[in-house]
Image (cartoon, rainbow, N blue to C red; front, side, top):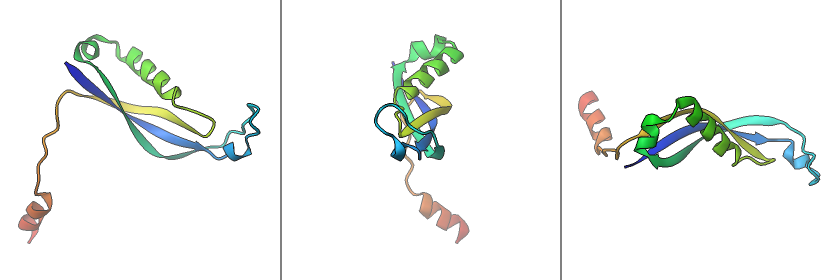
Length: 100
């Protein structure tokens, strides 16, 4: 069965990247600019038996592969989503009914 590992990462922008000369020398001035969610589809058996530290290290490497001179991502946390979400409609109406 396929499950999803949902990863929350910090997104950083390099404000020194505009000074990059294109020859590999890029000033580093990283500033946090919000978050980004990544989804990793994996087999449920793998999730149940993999060492957590090894999973996080693999996630770190996958995030590092997305980095470039202008932006980067750093792992914050993850959780495993084993099911399909249940959509419940009518939250605004319920609030109005309770607090009217």
